[in-house]
Length: 285
Image (tube, rainbow, N blue to C red; front, top):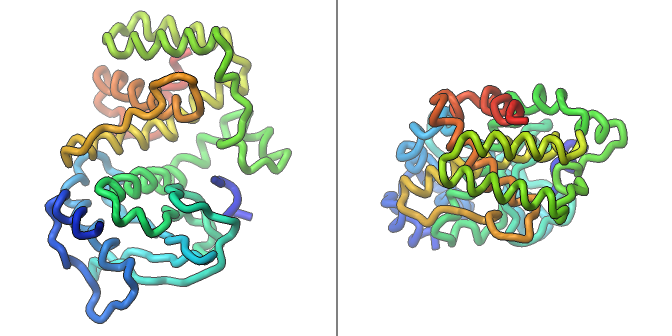
């Protein structure tokens, strides 16, 4: 089913982000999520120049009591509205921040969260991170995934969780050494060494593992890169999760973030052009 394919204090936030406390609330609205969600309209005006994806707001599904309350943006009225309430498609844990397709939206993606996100100072930043994934899924992602052997093989096996569960050799000492050296080279701005590290990674990794690494560096790395740009704009701490060892899938969030930052210095169309960003990362081998 499409919904399974990619599993996985409001007042304080208003003060922290400088947003008007009651802005955008629909008259007579009783759903408690609408007030917080409507702040996305004001927040977007603060950050929309960071990347073209932020011109669009996406549905948000709030998971609570084994249901999904799906809210969609009404751009004309500048408000989120409750579209429908449906049973959760699988057990959704507290603390989830994810984007994946929902059958209730005819396969379109939504940002899926649990209610405490609205009480966190950076909760809306995580929602915007997931909006990047919604934008990827609605535009270039299907085309780019179709070019990957790992994706085609996963679909043949009906393995819809490959993005989360691929058995990448994170503990291989050769991979760890090469990826750590790449982090160091990126930090030092040493482009020659960055390329040498990428060549070494391509030599070490099996084709599926190399595809997996570059896919995660693009998909999650781009979302992290834009998330951190928002954090800088809002004077919030940057997210550097994934830098420390032991390496995991989250390492590719940090690696992709830094690779995209490095690539953008030579080519300003990175990361604005999402397909070009993917191809630039993939060419580093």
